[in-house]
Image (cartoon, rainbow over the protein chains, first blue to last red):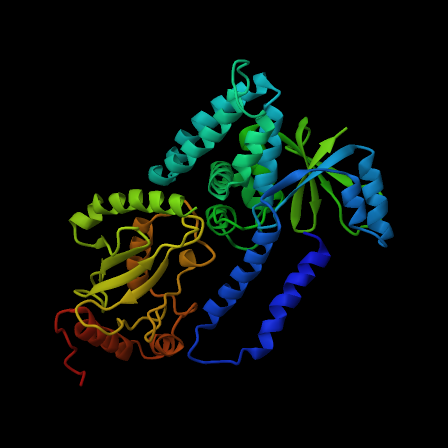
Length: 281
Length: 171
């Protein structure tokens, strides 16, 4: 969502505020949550979970009159041809990552087989770590169904829509799409807890890794930081290159590879608070 | 979406019904309507608390976005018609609204009705007065624990069917 759109949302919300008088009998907590849900609904109604592939020029258009960003987009365009936007709902890293990776697996049968095996085993690992079998199974089943839908297209005889179209449909169906996000959150949490002595150093404050997972990883809509990306990419053995585009002075858009030194299979664009998918030339 | 919520809650319903805790009468759920959008939960007041012997009924509403958003829970009264009353720092003595992190921003889809009911029962055993829902109760809890205990005990007796175990200094 562009800054312009976002501010439009807030102005709309703001219009209603002056008419609300403080009422001590009303639960203020609930009012705040209600307003938050309204903002979320605006975003939900205006931006798809995963958008269509767009030419890079659409990104340039967003920054008319902003020289720093314009230059950065130009530099980025040397490496990337398309962008695919995701809904900014706090789940964007997980959604962008899984979409981009599964899309890649459509054309990479060998990698698909490796990943499918790993994904199939992941449930037992989570249950062994103490995650409740009842719910883990629920999310794992859907996760495997989505993966197998990609695999189905490796069979030459398979009829039906092109693989990319199917994937796009699944990821824009809120139920399935969110199930994939939940499962990736569980895998991330599992990885953090399995290797907690390492990850503990990256957690601010006095929180334990387990607390951090309960507060910042497992709940939906919680935004992802480096630590989430390192854990997920390590757990799945999938390299991610993130391009960080912020208001820094450098005209280059800094790239970070996770896990360090890996070969990137997925490319993401980070702008403060949000991830979108990038497609290299 | 609604379909996912209904499927999931049906399975969770079974999970609770078959759980050990139901056998021990610690928690329970019942259907209110056939569409699984509304349920009635029950938790037994934990031992060695002023809620011991009480039976606390919860109104559970399942949002369409379940399990990605938490179920909405309110404490309701059993036999009597009016709204339930429980004297606890993290539960509104007026509306029954509950302040518990997993019912707000720490809800994770991997949790279930069963874990929610057990967490609530744990909340009755261990209040968190630093994160209160009811400021008056929380203040009393911090400053005059004896009076708090007596009031909570009394409310349990009057509103939740707890045994008459009034402290002899009380009243």
